[in-house]
Image (cartoon, rainbow, N blue to C red; front, side, top):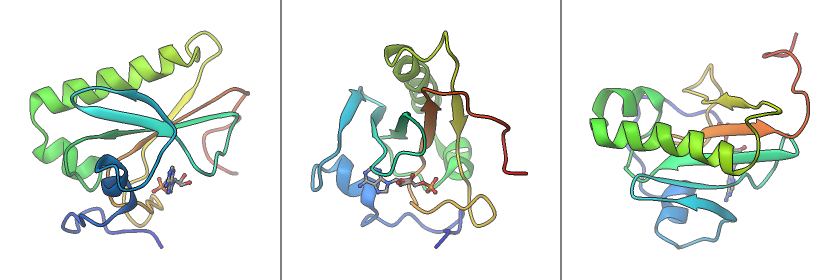
Length: 125
Ligand code: AMP
């Protein structure tokens, strides 16, 4: 079920548990501000999720409450992960679902990186 982008942070969400090391992930990158890992149900040949280490529900929450250092670190991490995956030259797509209409399911901010094939139009027509 999609979540409310303005809900209080729920410490038991699956990405919080990954950050605490309680459940495994296929990690591709980690630094002080961000963790990146393969999506468990990939929608493209390359499908990586990048999450901030801080407790932020959504892009809305992060852009309002995140520190300058957290935001800069997170944006740089997304770019670094895509470069490391060799996605810049062929191209890739970033996606952040927010709230109910965005169909966000995990209530910890995550940016999807999709690549590995031509991705077609932005939304289903
Ligand atoms: P969203 O609809 O933007 O909230 O997307 C949530 C994404 O998290 C989906 O693409 C799921 O496949 C992915 N996901 C859920 N649980 C895990 C997990 N344990 N490890 C990796 N990806 C996950």
